[in-house]
Image (cartoon, rainbow, N blue to C red):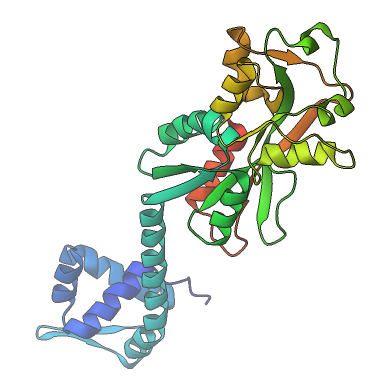
Length: 298
């Protein structure tokens, strides 16, 4: 005869009977009615094809087979307790804090929509957003001060894992009365020869512009700023052209404060990436990354 796999509750009951010396006491310990406990024990004996407990008016005593089964069941029940405790810790982790780092462009223009959608799906998770330039996001991920980061840099260090979550296009913007507004397009050589309003070193946008102008003798920037809003305001004031994310100038273009001038050649597109430590168990961080991937751009 082939025995069935024993029922976990039945094994637990048998273990409690061994500890209390009474089926009735074991049933009370487990919150069971005694008839239900008796049926559970009978089912366990039937499944195993063994007599496990001798019952008498003075109590219940395990048979030799019953004592062996309890000895064999203990590590199984202990492992199940560990599994349950681990699952509980995962639930607590999901209900705890998530610290997300984002580059300026991503943080100002994309994260708010990601966060709104994420909170609607997982309201129990408390999310903190830290906005900084891409280099600082990478450093914060590597130093374990944030759980996951989002950057717009052309490259990501080999020490981190990454996933493309979206795309962005950089555009050339000028003041409404700038001479370039009368041209059909400007070239990369035009950009190299012109003092630009630029982001600070370490910014993903600055890295992309530096990569674009590599190999050319580029003019010294007229101004370095760490705020996209300040850059747009400076361009609108006529201080100089800038290369910025299309996301960052939507309102300014609509309000006629700046104009976009087409750049000759292929559009200047870049990947937006999530970055994290390879050794990190992502958990709820991965859910946020998936939210970023699946939230359509505005």
